Amino acid sequence: MIITTKNVDFFYGAYRALSNVTLDFEKNRVTALIGPSGCGKSTLLRLLNRMNDLIDGTRVEGEILFEGRNIYAPEVDPVEIRQRIGMVFQKPNPFPKSIFNNITFAPKLSGVRDSGNLEALVEESLKQAVLWEEVKDILDKSAMNLSGGQQQRLCIARALAMKPDVLLMDEPTSALDPISTAKIEELIDSLKKRYTIIIVTHNMQQAARVSEYTGFFYLGKLIEFNATEKIFTNPDVKQTEDYITGRFG
Amino acid sequence: MKWRYFRQGLFFGMVRLSALIITLVLLGIIAFLFYNGIRAVTWDFLTLPPTDSMTKGGIMPAIVGTLYLTVGAIVVALPLGVVSAIYLTEYAKQGRFMRIIRIGVNCLAGVPSVVFGLFGLGFFVVFLKFGSSILAGALTLGILILPTIIGAAEEALKAVPQTFREASLALGVSKWRTISRIVLPSALPGILTGAILGVGRAAGETAPIMFTAAAFFTAALPKSIFDEVMALPYHIYVLATAGTHIEQTRPLQYGTALVLIALVLGIDLFAIIMRSRVRRKKRW
Image (cartoon, each protein chain N blue to C red):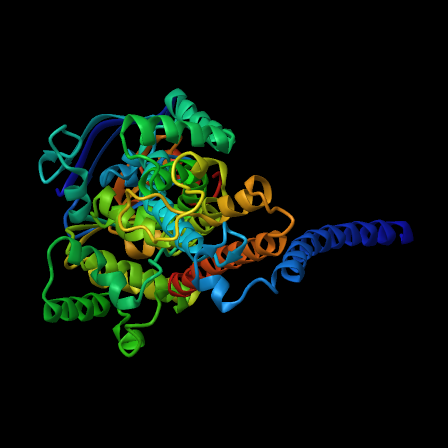
């Protein structure tokens, strides 16, 4: 168990976006969170690395344990949490910098200075994100010139360069074409040996393809959490089955 | 059907006309100054101090004085304005306190410039004992252009996509470093636009420097920031209203105005070139 949420409630002002979510994420596995729009799956994902801190007027109740420690305890520094729990967003969001500087930006600030180390880090991260062969000759060019799919893989490489333990992915392929999507899915498969991956997706085939565990959310509640195979073949809860088979949602 | 095309044509015509009128007004002013002033502008005019109770000679001390005052005002207002804008957009929680600050900034923008002059006189010149000096004038002009700079910097910061901030924060970069390394560089072109507007305003104002920095006449250049200086707008004012040879110095007045406009446009051009360079590097 690398991350555990215990009775988590989350409020945007008076609106309750999550209620009583209790869930375990296993180390070095891919866990998918699915459910219709507004069900709270992205909210939960953003709670795991304290990105919801950025929104005024929100409130968390319950506990989220990362390696046994409550990340919402007052003495915890969210910056440190985010260094260990990386995130990839729905829309590729590279910085308006060169490919090289996109990757080295955060590691430099956290103390990797030596230029040889930085070059090695860039190569390693881009290779892990299966982008190295495509960009190795244009590392000094702006990341903004890459295609959408390449930008998204760059964003993954950028997150990996911080050597996180967990990678959160918020609908990482919803803005991409089918070929780029397939590449990202292959990538997820190869990354799970070294990282714990939690992915929010609208695409149920994608959840079935890439994940070992799946959580189904509806109206802010965790309806069912189970092995992916079970969820997609023989779910315990009727509501899950209805959603999977497309009867609602 | 025809009527709709006609209406559209009419509307576009009006839009074009408005743009044309604005351009013509600007060109008209420049042409007028050029026509009346160009004969006065000679090498001596630009490099010599006034002579013969300011009916002859040049305006060099006023050019230098205006440069000092304008640069001083930007040095005062740019850091303060940018830091205020960062506080307002990135740190402060939206609420009643923020509304009060915003109203304050907007009111500051609406205060007549002569009031700034009186404030500068009372506070910088008399109370802080700076005397009538470059320092007092630059501080007064700095406060005058502060709302312009804050407004432009705020807009520039708000225009930086939220996704840049999220991307940086999600990498475990602290908020301050996210702002200083990602947000601020992306906002730089917009902030420079604010600085350009500020420069134009600071260089052209007369009232704020009248009591705080401007000398009626000094042939010598200032030796320190505690010296008073001549300044172009005040020099025009003096020649046109306070001298005893108003008609006789008319060409000098136009010449000085022409130099002032050229100076402001020159500084603007410099800032615009800098801005487009920065922009080319920071495209998104």
